[in-house]
Image 1: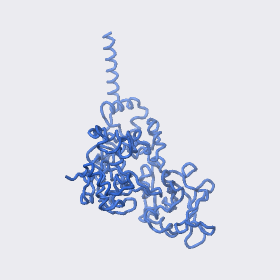
Image 2: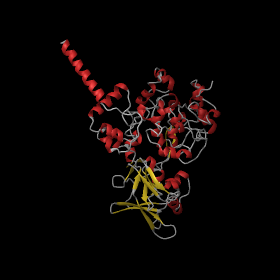
Image 3: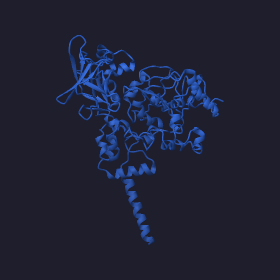
Length: 496
């Protein structure tokens, strides 16, 4: 029996040795080409299936009955001044229609009767709003001036509402002239995979660009995959040993970027490229040209040095990048910034995919992680063990009720989301920020919201201040000077 056992061990060791020495070696630093997401689906079946139904994959599409969410059955858009009384004589500023399976937006002419139709060549977005692009002779994909609001179920002049400017037919035509209306030269970096600008003119009226695939493909996050495919394709031994190396020896996946293999800043650069919109103008090309992988000097491409570079000037009002008068980020374009400002970014290894499913970005990484729930509490309390021992004492709320969940107080809804045409607030990602109603009392709730009054809307800021004092939490009531330049420290500072 012992001889048989030792024989089996010897065979196992021999096989392991054959596998170990039979695998192909691979370089740590590499440069590869883009191959497209379909090449990934052959092996990564589960992750590929999740990605196929994700907003990332479907963020940009060709127009058809399945991808167009707006009303193109003789739809109409009226200017604000005309919206109250759509009489028989009132003419819409924009009409929408279909013709032989193609989709058109027709813009009312300024100096003559009638409308100019624009064929829709691409549709961008579908969850909250949808943008429509038309192809110009010079190669520019031009953004058309009205978009579809899913929540309203109607067309709306997105940029007029963003900038709070008056609507007019003349202004709608003007909106197709700025540099940023040339979608494939401006916005496409976050809606395509491997965008390459071959040529353009300074006024953005001519453009020659290419991309590997439309939409956010696998290689946007994992880097160009040609070498990975070559290493794995028709080589079962390499596949088996790469898994063994990953699971047992903590080695990186061959020739592809996997966030878990790298530092927090390098990993989150993948997200920041598109979600970290709060950057200085001089960094735009750095972000545009970023891709996961190595530069020509063998260094990992890393955007983390720029995450918090743009000053959070109190009261800043740039469209989508607003800052509250108390210095906290306010606009949706600053949402990633709120996390980069947080103590959990600076002091822990917390990452976006701890909460968000990286392959289907609409879904949580696990049940309950994207809302206040026992599951999200458990995630937080797995580190904050002293609080877990007496959660009611910490929250001053009945367990499993509003106010007793970590997100309720430490991730309040104070980020303004205007993208859908129906303004609402979403959660700040400055994880660990502490409610400070004293700031609300000083500046007004409309200028400095706090988590207490977010739920207790019938009460004022003084009530919230009094409650914290009653609970011997005076240390959280910090004065204005600590908050005009917010940082990871200022949001958790306690006064003596």
